[in-house]
Amino acid sequence: MDWVSKEINSLKEAGRYVPIRVLESAQGAWVSIEKKKMLNMCSNNYLGLANNEEVKKAAIEAIKEFGVGAGAVRSIAGTNSVHLELEKKVALFKHMGSSLVYQGGLLANTGTIPSIVGKEDIVFSEELNHASIIDGVRLSSAKRAVFKHMDMKDLEKQLKEHRNEGKKALIVTDGVFSMDGDIAPLPEIAELGEKYSAMTYVDDAHGEGVLGSHGRGIVDHFNLAGKVDIEMGTFSKAIGSMGGFVAGDEQFVDLLKQRARPFLFSSALNVGDAAAVLKSIEILEKDDSLVKKLWDNSEYLKKSLNDLGFNTGSSKTPITPVIAGDEKKVVGLSRALYSEENVFASPIVYPTVPMGTARIRLMPSAVHSREDLDYAVTAFEKQGKKLGILK
Ligand SMILES: *Cc1c(COP(=O)(O)O)cnc(C)c1O
Image 1: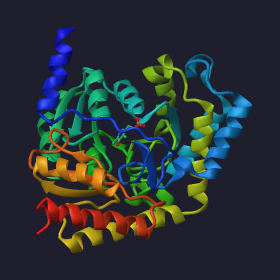
Image 2 (image 1 turned 90 degrees about the vertical axis):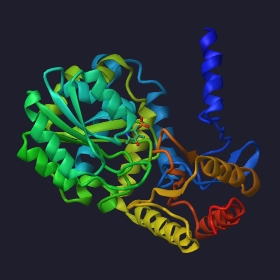
Image 3 (image 1 turned 180 degrees about the horizontal axis):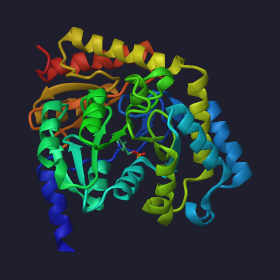
């Protein structure tokens, strides 16, 4: 096992060893870390639903009635009526025929993709796709053609050159790209799918609860109901809990229940989590004020940072990257924000983003107040000047 310490040391030397911060409180605008109250600017809890009273109550009630564990895999004895209720709700919310709930978003991708393509087939995959899509494609053994980020000319070129190399073809993309906050041109992708007889699959992890009417996601945002074959998402970000799903037509979901390995070989999502998710979606259906507050806050944050001269890149969503380029400066900024300003905002550096585009990714939420955002901006201004990132 000697190699382990060598590996750890080389990560540390390269500045790529990530220390893990430990929260001692619930998720929210302010959290407790190392006994200090810190302004939390890096959770995916976009709408504050992770610590919402109604959502917690729904989970507690479900646990009282059904216990804590699902007891088995879905295909044996782990399917509870709450799972089915949730699957119906997700399909309705998404305007899709049917849906399947998984234990997480990563499992939704790694379970679904190998269930629909195999070694005879080909996948056209966006170059900045999430790791769980990449893993799903690898597990499928399908051939792979990677197209350039947001580049529809390149996608069409790849389709022309390689479509015939697979019996079935699948175009797969993130909906919102998590490092830059830009949005995939889904209408063009759907058209190209149609033109070249390829299935289309969008991972809406950062679009759920954020884009579209009442946070229905990217397909609703572009008015594409019926034009995208498969929509995948997570319940762990804006929805505030845990779990993932895939939505599509009824027969497709039926087939997944026979094939998807996380459905067949890993125990079901706990019923308390399923009940929490159900409540979160009900809250969104009834009332879009949290979604509106999220967007107000993110526009305010971006404008305040831009007015000071910070570069927030090409984001079209609440994801707010503060791009400073230099890796060491960004790591230094994050450290100074943490230790001197009580602002918790993690640095994102190569290889997660291209060399020279290091950044701090800020995640505003509906539970941040204007004062909280001003507090963060003031801290960025002070430390940005100190470190020479701002003139
Ligand atoms: C977070 C994320 C996932 C994984 O979802 P989990 O529910 O956390 O497993 C998948 N895809 C994308 C694009 C994500 O951002």
